[in-house]
Image (cartoon, rainbow, N blue to C red; front, side, top):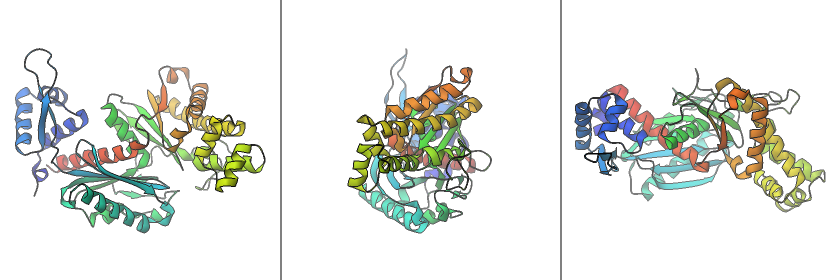
Length: 400
């Protein structure tokens, strides 16, 4: 039995507000929650007594007594975050303030199926908990991101194009065999959107996060919340058609932007250029390594290779074409681009921007900011931690 089991609705609301504020005073909590000062002081006092909150020092004075900063108690427990990509897995143990206590990343192949991949994820979770001296009983919540459409209410993938063997597999039930803590599963790019919300402390209410890697997806933040749609498939933009006569996508349709501009498409085009004698640099890379990766294309581009430049510009232009439709429809203030593509550099970003500004309405782009995500490759894990704690608190508050 833990203090979590006795949370009242107003206590859960205070804990959520403190979490999203990254340090708040009693007065700030009262303002944000529309509580009286007396109620805010009373709820905070109770949470301090229960060891759920702690005071971490004085804030700057604006006149009068300096307020104490509040945060979730560091000994409250730990979170487990896992970011599963098409070709990698990232697992971390985090404190309630999302400080990383232990972390491990390695290559993985989702085509191996859930049994192989998730058994490794479970092993890594156990190892990392032991590494930081924690036990499964101290885990407050688990958040896991996957590269495919997720039925969020049930925590399982539905017809994921990149991972067909995972359709209908209950990741939540599988991980519950080891942990009593709640398990939450979401699309990987939704986790990136949550991470941006956390970084910005919800200061931007309407923005998009695009992930470009093996696939292409979009996280949608609307009115300060991640929008998942009626069944959890909102933002599956990788299968928007950008060329009706383009190559066949693994989803079965022709000309999807994912099939023409994601990492594998760039690597395929670079291989074709190398074999056709269009690039000495790419041909040398293919001969030395046997394969060409998007990072190889980026490296060739930095050395002035014309073929590599064209590949990067074309990919950016096609993604910008898709994004222009999203911008016209949703009118976001910002677009953050993440995933492995961020390592390609400024030429890709410039091509995306040029295409979006060319194809979007002037009013939609008047104040639009398009940039790589500042969180870079940490975004997925940060988002997994946010998901784990946010949804655990919501669940506790709803049960009160």
